[in-house]
Image 1 (tube, one colour):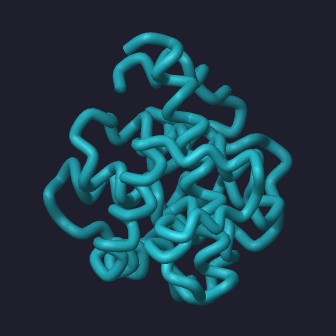
Image 2: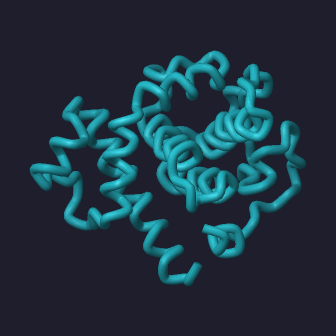
Length: 186
């Protein structure tokens, strides 16, 4: 995939995240926000892909939240930080329903969003852990019991990304894979 399209998709995910976040905190349906053009910021560019993401998340929200609830130990979906919840919903939608986005890319992009916009110091680690369990359940075709939820204390190392996201015990000193390398597979 061309680098331009990778960049376009990254910006679309950021726009989709802004809309999902806005919808959650205002308790306004995302479809209504899209229809009215009531975007949370002037710089939100609602591309075709961004719109497909937010409307897809809205349409499949019950399934997505069920998947999140079954894999996030000690975290009810409605008690997750709002930004983290929006990032997770977006990533799970891509993992389950967008055929041309590999699971590892969806995880990597979600971790990058969590690093940039996450609501907590350990947002990237939390997002990585939840999505890693979902990825393992998809690989095995079975539900994976939550087992390695991140600790409440922030970790000083950055969260591992992409393929390392599916390792149950990622190495603390492993560096995240560059987004351009993994995203080319989109």
